[in-house]
Image 1 (cartoon, one colour):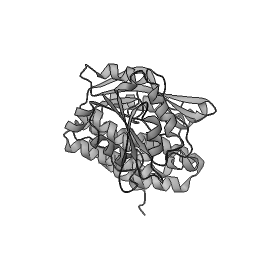
Image 2 (cartoon, one colour):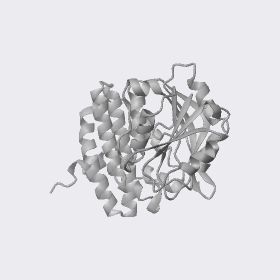
Image 3 (cartoon, rainbow, N blue to C red):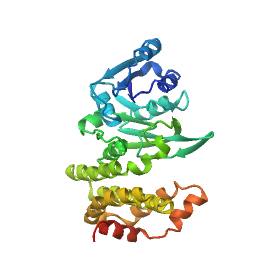
Image 4 (cartoon, one colour):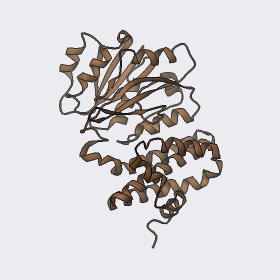
Length: 323
């Protein structure tokens, strides 16, 4: 059986579409659906009543709004099937074969997580494909025993909590398989955490992102993960902050730059402890993967013709706030 965990906060306008995409699945009879009510204004009893005719769907609640990471942890702790899939309350599975393709790969195998591709809807019927993505929970199926045996949990951060979760799984030795199928559609919802207020999250969420990265590096060290893995995580994060800085700098977002530089300083200091464990091959792989995200010429020009180098950026971060 497969537990599909849906963290839901005031998701009444979108969750039925998500549930409809589950009903469409070829193996919907193998699914338990858990709606984790993250202190929404009203419950989902009407949704449960409507969909219980077609699915084994359960609502779980607790006392206060805790964010998606806490909600997913609650779902993990209050479910029991062999496999776990996360579906956001405003997203859908792409085809009736989506869940089946993930299940077939992980079942009767030694894989701990199977990762597929997904599409990000950006409006005007445009979609950005995400291939072999290790960050988001989208389009993945997890073996519960690995999560439990290795005490893998989301952080309580309200952003980038899935980055911590997935990196911790992958970098602690999980057996990972990638499939080429597109199984998930990240729908364009302007009220979601990552997109509301004109994508304000993209710079105000940096503090949470950096805390997740820093805590991830500590957790990996505590678990005796290879130092090269810690170096890769820190380099990956610093490179993302560098490219983010280039965009913010061109847009002259003073507040955003201050948040980014002050937040990144601690990670940059930690990177100096592990940078010698980063191989040139790993460095180039991370760089090439990041650059491939910038598909249009305007965006690409910012990262190929930057106004400062990466090393200059690290120097500025290290000295930021000093008089």
